[in-house]
Length: 317
Image 1 (cartoon, rainbow, N blue to C red):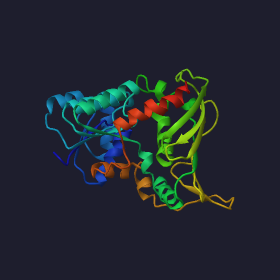
Image 2: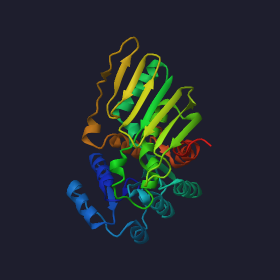
Image 3: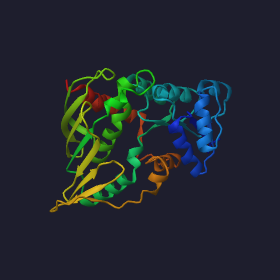
Image 4: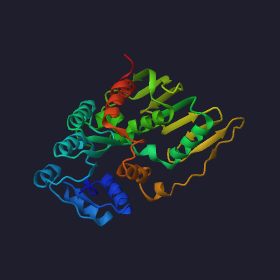
């Protein structure tokens, strides 16, 4: 049981996790709720799904595996993680953002603390080959001096998506936090932050235009912008004393050297990012090997939401 993994969910994200687990020759059991998703999962992975949902499974299966990966639908992430903790699971990787909202994430963090469980939050972009290469360059250059990011969302598409209860209203947390987590992972977490918000969307009342700036704990200055009612895309730019590193798209790394206006793509070994969902292979491998140095845990995630995610999406008070 120690080397076995419980995979919760049978949707597209669970399929991506299963493909990595199969490549790593890891034994796992998949639990799902939808017959259609289970059929799709079987077709794409060759693996069966135990139907009936995680509550039924945990109620009738008392054995506890060494690890669990929670790839349930977004609105159920927190509830499922708490169920796993209460069933005795002590080591869980949950898909970002770890819960459907701040209160849900707090419930997970409280349950983890009470039961001495480790809950890691899967932000797979931290593990992109482009990010790995950028970190090498940043270290060689002596660190980040400033950085910029943009988390524009395509509202004309997102507003038509069918998601679980409350997910679209918390889209900043469920999706935009991907790019914000990456920016602060590379440049350092905010020490000071001034943020401004305007506009709103029917499905996202908290705002539609966001801008701000601050100082990271690393000493680097940063700024950001996002307009969900205008064209745009996700962007991260990181500046050192020698280079400007540009992620546009995030899977690729472009570089500009000091004294030059030329911007060139950096050659990277992205085999794992093309064979699997980008970043997921290394994320899962690190999790299974218990190398948590690049993974955020649920307590850090709770702090991030409270200390700067909420400020970015709601504005400085």
